[in-house]
Amino acid sequence: MLEWDGKDFKKIADNEDWHYRALDIPARGGKVLFGQKGGNASIFSGNVHELKWVHGYYVSTNKEILPRGLNVYGFSYGDILNSGQEMTLGFNANEYLSLFNANGGEEWTSSDPYGGSNSYLEPPAEIEAAKKIRSDPDPRTQNRLYLPQRILITDLDKDGKKDVLVVKNIDTTGGVFSRIRLFKSGYFESLSWDNVGLSPKWRTRNFSGYISDYTLGDIDNDGKDELVFILVTQAGGSVLGADRSFVISWDAK
Image (cartoon, rainbow, N blue to C red):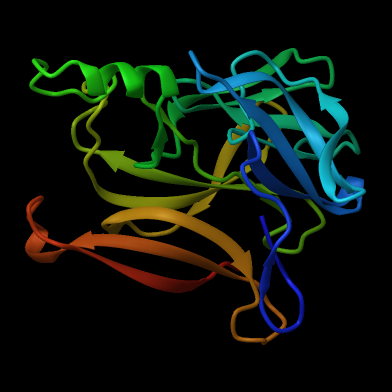
């Protein structure tokens, strides 16, 4: 963990057994740091915790009660129903969006998957075991966990109601391979609650390539937030070509 001291980045923590994630939660005063312990036989161990800096260390100050199947990377909090109640929105194991109430009960699940990521983690124990199997022509682990994409909950069009912004990368393999993903295009979709579920409000055009990450911010200082994202493309459209990446700003109004 590095911290800017005015001149340089100073190391303040090292070799910590946490998976970290920061979320912007206005109801809790802004940025909140969450962590989940790493396991040996599995990637994650135990609950997600809210972490705070206390006497030179990050320590747990609150245990998050999340619905089963969600990890530190796969959820967000927000007033999705615009009712004044904070709810949990997350990706399940098959990358469908699910909305949960304060008691962890499922209120809604999307009919189509969203997200799509090439970033993954593997169980440490399986990594070590695979290294020892010299006869295996493909010693990579079998249980990859592909990390979910971000879920942004914000009032995009400034109408006083919260919207949900998600990406949808299109896997040309159809999800049949557990260790291979091939994304050739993707787009963003804004969803809003209509008393039945989260329904599409608008979407961008398809972008040729893989959308690896995104955020909202006023990149040109005009007082309005833009959608800023990284688009990864392959030279000449060939899977054997070198990847190229671009930072793109899109008017999100």
